[in-house]
Length: 390
Image (cartoon, rainbow, N blue to C red):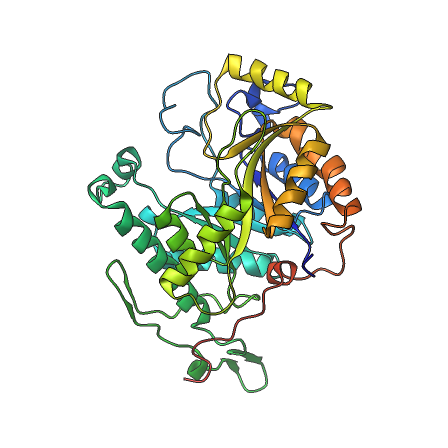
């Protein structure tokens, strides 16, 4: 087993990833647009020793494309980056990773948002980079039609988006701020740098308006199902979420080693240098005391609103889930990002039952140490500023 613990991450999506979750007891659907709802979920994840949480986002009110206008589905969402700014300071240890959609956002703005998140969390910020090819989302902005663009172009744009962010984070050297009242010098202007990025999608001069983040480079993550997404992750990300295939309602049957190999193949294809991707499996979970009860619960929920998902589904007991994650660790995955089907039920089972079981098996941490950065938790070094010796 690696010296690094198996990382337990939790993907937060309102009242849960099942579209009927908002109707379940304890779901608090009337609270999900308030700060306390999100603070409670993130603190629950931290109490369960999760390495980080991700916060979903999108440009349409529907959580699932095609659900617009339906009255039986949860509609509306808060901005993930702003939610992260609120919940981050309410925690002490785990990473906070909001979703960012590169297709309709400017990297200069996003870079300052994520840098700010890193500052207010003392180095625990990240982002999940995402693309949008939905013409309905493009219509909200009216500047372009990504439906007329190739998928490859959208992913290339996302890679450039991240590259611009990374250069802007480096545009202030770590010691650029002097803050010397006696001499009246607040900043060493020689340690602020123009990035002069010119690419197919962006031309950004810089420098940033925000000093270099505490982590130097906040963590970038990406979800990969297809080759283009794997290549994006290999070019731009630190962490990739993979979805072992072959999933059925009896649990995932795909080979986790296959997705690990796909990530490594993508790294070789793009000529990645430096630290390899941290490869984390994605899994939607619905937990009960035993597998039969969990499957019955999933059938009941699907009878109200059918679940559609891009991830494997495990409906079973905590022991079943622990066995699966143990097999993933043995296959070489660095962790798992769990999507609670019904947050009111599945999130506490993950944090209060699964986390202790994984610790008992020697897979995960059993307690928090001293507060550190998300890079520290992931075992990634503090990167050197590319402009420091220019």
